[in-house]
Amino acid sequence: MEIKVKTTKHDEILDITDKIAELIKNEETEEGMCFVFVKHTTCAVTTSEYTNDVKQDFLDFLRKITPQINFRHDQKHSPDHLLSSLIGPSLSIPIKDGALDLGTWQRVFLVELSGPKERTISVTIIDE
Image (cartoon, rainbow, N blue to C red; front, side):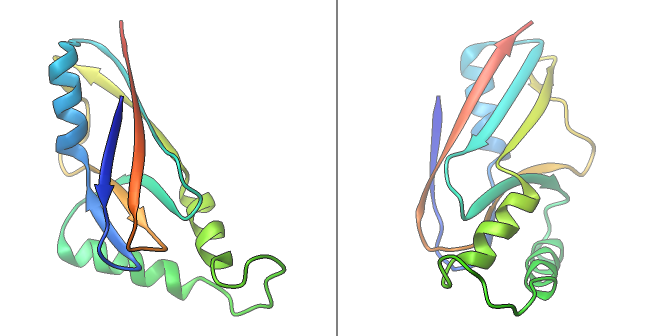
């Protein structure tokens, strides 16, 4: 299964939790695992609290830790490739009682580092 999302900014965070939850509901999986994988090298997926302040702090932090060095590959996207690798392209989330078994404040989000673009996220649900 796939989710497609369109980003609108160069750096952006989109909450994709509800889109994943809908897939789980449609599959009628009560217990199992959900694997989320983004099919791009300049964006990533992770979990965190999802408020405007957290989103902006997260993006500001990423750009602040990016060193100003002479990158050896694709000068335009080098930092984006490295930051997305640090965050990671995938997540494994338990499914419990037909829903993502996330913590109280956790949401799943896509971290866009080179938008705006259409992004494809692969979702695999394994029933226990």
